[in-house]
Length: 381
Figure 1 (cartoon, rainbow, N blue to C red):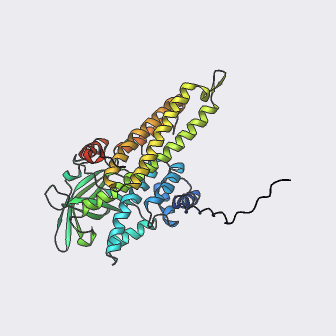
Figure 2 (tube, one colour):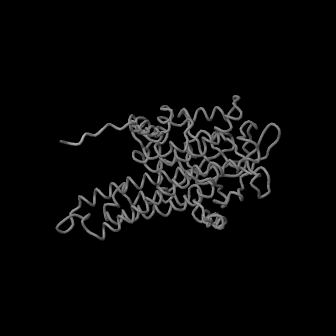
Figure 3 (spheres, rainbow, N blue to C red):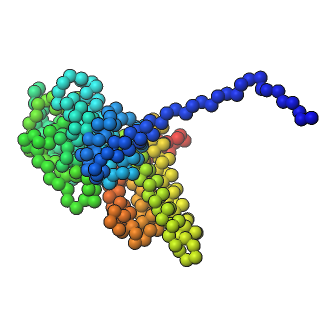
């Protein structure tokens, strides 16, 4: 006779339902927004669609992977860049001002137009006078009085410069080399004294890259964004989010490229079998997977960090180097296919901006070196 088993005296613990993934929800909504577009290569149309679907308002870091991963799957690199910089940096800077001073004014109007998708923005930090990533050397200046401001100087390699209705300009209001010497100014790109010139020969089609020139641009003081002296503090806080956004975008790009390359290697004949059967090819591909994993791990480490500005420099450098390895090696594995129109060789050239946008790799390494004692302590990064 089989042994009788009694029922347990306590009911099994019910599994805890997983928390909803905000990134998955945003990914589905982004896909729905892009599905109705005639072409995903039109940056203004993409921005408008995102705004109409409510994807630009109060977007936090948790939603960025869903947004940027989906954009990467559908849109050219330049179009994704045109969105990435604004949702990670420009919109949050404006939102802080709107939340602090909700009265009507040009900053509030520009913010509402942007999040609704009616107009795009351009974050303008890098000067055209050679200062590059050393923002303390900015030569763009603003003179302030009680009622107005006058802006002079220029910005270089600015995403959306040729398409934006407003540029969010980081300018110096005091001559001292100090983080309290800067302020944000919201500048209508059609204001008297503003001139826009296109960047030629760039592989980032759709990014609207260009230079901004300011010659005695006179605006009401209401175009200041935040208090004078807080511009660099605000920039430092939000550039960390922009670097994280670049990291999750690079991770999505790696997954897409690796999946496509793997499929091609499995299908391609080689000798009596397929290219994927070759041990040397499998090892080279596996090294690419490791690099992609490192990018994802760096994103996770940054997300948990209590020192986001420091870890964002580590993340930025890791992404630039790892992404180039993945794209370069996958292009080599595909051979001549990589040089077709829209192939991996072109993508690798466009993705080179990961080494400069948001801070050049050399500047990041210099910043990391400043924090070596802290980074080498026995603690998680």
